[in-house]
Structures are given as structure tokens and as C-alpha cells.
Length: 329
Image 1: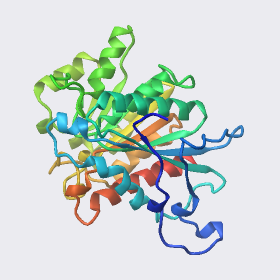
Image 2: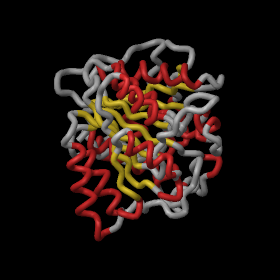
Image 3: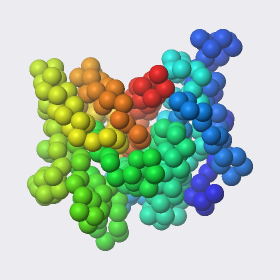
């Protein structure tokens, strides 16, 4: 395997044991850890649903973007927060944890390429990639893998729950956690293709006018965080539905800094006025998931170094739970 690959650690997946009956199982009893240096992912039977958990242990992009580093520990913290969840998905489904891509030498571009290669292989085998960040530099890596995949290719749209557009032009240090969608938009433009991008939860005080102008120039769509309220829920759901209808496949990413700091203190850049993880947000998330078009998912910016009582990790885990429920139902 690639030098940036580290196998899964089975000791992370521990928790309460209520018995051997499948109705009493928890995630730590069904997730199978796999070392790709020793064994490949097994072939799936026709119609079989399966998911692969893959970490992206990197915050090099956050460092380059002048954020608070620490998200490199996010994948491990998130696994621990998920381990004790009860199993409500189909227990005949296969769920593998294949470990992490780790950026431990500041060579972000090489680590992103390694993750892209794995995501592409996972998709082509028929599995659903569930990628745990790490900084939001995971976006460029994940989508690069989607684009390389024979099963998905270029017919995709991106939906990003985020306080920020992440559409900055790379600076002197190169790509960062804030440049992913700029890179993807430039690649689409160079190929003469449209760029389909919807950002949900954008905060005006977290993005310069230049970033709003850049998003507009690339044809990106956005819904501000101020629209995430009960009175605007129907319009929000309608807008998401109309966007999803435009493409065959959807890449979904959630940056945890989209949420108010009281709910997500453990992120690289907190937002005091972020959205609430309430029923309006869940309705929007479920609208995306229930479309049946999501082919890959990642969650970014969990920074355990600044978390309080594992508050952010538990929130992130609950979102992973929502995704798994839909993927393996």
C-alpha cells in the first residue's frame, strides 16, 4: 500500500456488550477492521450494501490556512464516539474500517492523492466511502477519487454544509483546507464543464466579499445560515431538491464549523452564530441522503484538542449515524 496508509486499529472499536442477539448489537460488534497491506476488501454480491470507514488524519491544510491545528486526531476521536452506537441498519450489511491516510510529513498533495486512490477503489468495488477528517482539505482528495472512479466519473454535484465557501485561491504554500472547491472549480473550467456546487449554512461574517464574488464567478449556489429556521424550512428543502435533481451523483461533506460554537467548540474555526443541529438542519440533511444519489461522504474539522466534554465528537458521530442509517437501510 501507499506510504501514507496506516491500517485500522481494532482497539478503538470497543463499547458496551448487551449480548449476542443481533437486535442487541452495537457498532463495535459489527465493524470489521482490515489491513489493506495484508488483505483486500472482499468482492460484494450483487445488490449487497456495504460501507467502508476511512480516516484522513491530516490538518496540514488547516495549518496552511492559518487555522487551529489538532484535527489530525479527529478520525480516532470520531471512531470512539461511534463505537457504542446501537445497530439499527441491516445487520447483513458489511462495514469495514480500513484505517487512515495520514499526512505526517507536510506533503498534503501526496496524502490527498493517496486518499483519492483509495476512494476510487472503494467506489469501484461497490462500497460506500465514509471518510472521517481531518481538515477540510479532505474535500479535494475525496472528490478527486470520485472523479477517478469508473462508476461515478464526472456526473457529480457537491453539497457542503459549512460556514465557509472553501473557495480560496491557493496561496504560496499551495492548497489548504480552504481551497478545495476553488481547485475543483478550476479543473471543471479547464475541462469546459459546469461546476455544480451548493454551500449550505454560509455566514456573511466568515467570508470576504472576494469569496462571495469567486463563488458567483464559478456559478456556485449557496444558502446562508440565517435561512436555517422553521419559517424557511420548506423553501430550504425545495432549494436542495432542485439542486439535487440536476445531477446523477452527489458528494456530501459536512464541516463541523457550520454549527454554533456552543454545539461544536472542537473545530478549527468556531462560529458563534452558526446553525443549530436541530430539526431544520436534520430535515435538510435527510433531504440530501434520501435522494439516493450520495456516493461518498466526509465529515471535517473535528478538533479534539479544543473539544469540551466530547461535545463536538458526539455531534459528528450523530451525523455519521444518520448517514449510515440511510446507506445501509
